[in-house]
Every structure is written in C-alpha cells, then in structure tokens.
Length: 396
Image 1: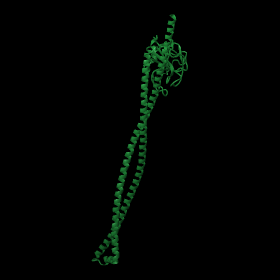
Image 2: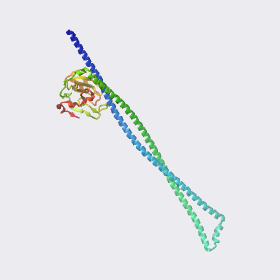
Image 3: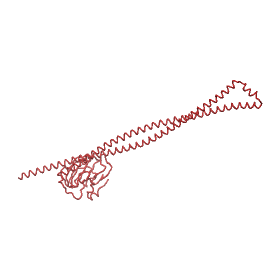
Image 4: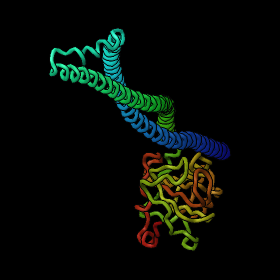
C-alpha cells in the first residue's frame, strides 16, 4: 500500500514538473513572439518617422517649387506683355516710317516735276521772269518767289529725310529691345520647364513616400495585432497554469541586483521614461533603468520563480522572475544565464552575468519591474529600491 502511494506521489510530482516546464516553455515562446513583434514594431515606427520626415521635406520642397513656378510664370507673362508692347511700337514706327517715306517720295516727285518742267521750257521761263516783268517791282518779286519755292522744297526734303532717319533709329532700337526680351523669355521658359520637371520629380517622390508610409503603417498594424494576440495568449497561459500556485513572499523593497563592489553598480546611464533613441531599433520610451556595468554578476532582488530565461529580440538574453502575483522583475542584454526556466531563486542568489546582447549601445544591465508580467504594466524600478541604495545612485 505504501509502495503504491509512493509511486502515485512520484508520478504526481513528475506530471506537475512536466506541466510547469511545459507552461514555462509556452509562456517563454509567447513572450519571445511578443518581444520580437514589439522590437520589429519599434524599428518600423523609426522607419515611419524617417519616411514622414522625408515626406514633409519633399512636400516643403514642392511648395517652394510651386512658389518659384508661380514667380516664373508671372515673369513670363510680364515678358510676353513687354514683347507685345514692343511689337505694337515697332508696328507703329513702321507705319510712321512708311508715311514719312511716302511724304518724302511725294515731295521729291513734286520737285522733280518742277525741275523737269523748267528744263523743258529752257531759259525762256527763267528769262521771262527777269526780262519780261510787268514792272520793275514785279522783277524782284518774281525772283524772290522763285528762290523762296526752291529753298522751301530743299528744307522740306531735308526735314523729311531727318524724320525718316529718326523713325528708322527708333525702330532699330525697339527691334534690339524686342530681341533682348525674347532672349530673356527663352531663358525664363527654360527655367520654368526645369522648375516644373523638379516639381514633377518631387511629387513622384511624395507619392512613393506616401505608399511606403502606408505599407509601413500596415505592417505596424499587423505587429500591433500580433502583440495583442501574444499578450492575450500569455495572460491565458498564466491564468490557466500551475505557475499561479507560486504566490511568493515578497514584501518591503527590492535589493539592488548588483553588488556594491561592482564597478559602475550605481551609475544610471538611462533612466525610466522618455529619451532620445540611443541606437536604431531601441525604444524612445524607456520603461526601465540601464545600469552602467560591464559583465558583472546579477543577483535576484527577492525570492522568486524564473518564468523566462531565453534570448528575446531587442532584449538579447532575457530573464523574467515572478516574485508575487503583483510583482515581476526583468533583466536584459545579459551575456549568460545562471538559472533556468521553472527554477525558484532566493534573494541575493546569482541569476546571470550582465552583457551587451540584443539592441544595445554597449555593455550594461537593463532592469525592469512589472506589476503583472506584461510589458504594459512596467513601472519605475527605483520606486521599489531602498533609500539607502537610491541615495548612492548617479544619473548620467
């Protein structure tokens, strides 16, 4: 009878152990999937920020090009108006020139007819003026009239000639201005075409960035869905597992996870909360504290149960310890593990060696406190540290 009871007890212990190990592995896998999705989501969000910045720059450039194109087209309109004015002025001068040439030709023809008529009548006409006046006074009057007509014709022809030359000079000057304006217009048209081509290229770039932005957002949505699903599965696994039987005996404050003899044990290189992205893929909302130690022993800050001891994307080598139903601690970027999943640990027991695995800018210890094991329940670890330790911390 005793033998049967002993065998049954052994079988129960073995089954319970297998159940716990199976649960731990399942939770670890789920947490790994979740952390992987979160890490990839962070990388995509960083890419999204970059794409949005590039899109914003491209759109600003399009706006600048729009303004330049508008100025260029206004300049072209002004040049076209100037050319039209010059063409009208040239046409007017050509008309005036034609009229002046017609007047000159008419006057020359009148003078020519008069000279020919005088030539045909010979000296008779001239001598008749001199020798056959009706009186002596008529002689001087006829001579004066003859000279006056000749002089008037000569002055009129000279005036017409000067007016013609002046009109021609004005026309030539207008033609030169028109040529210069046409040259300026040709250059302005070339610049306008360049600006429009540049705008077309930028618009194409904006469209591509918009498409890329949509694709990234779609992937982010997919990762958000995966994270939510993993979190749901984790909570389901935690709720349905025998790990709930571990209640823990945590009370008071957490011990510091590093020995005070470790160099850099009190140097906080990155505090809890918002920060600039230290390296590609790293979080900008730091829900932990980073401690500036290099490959130093890490100790359990309280009694607990090792829920996870695996490599997790982003975190590198990662440990999660359950201390009670409402308190978990996590450790990232470890170089090695000194405990395994399903193991119970005591306060001050060695659990790992700090390191530089995962997404990291250098060797350090990433230290988290979670209230229910989920990433959304992370709180500031320094709120759980004794004042005697807190007073020695140095924030960089």
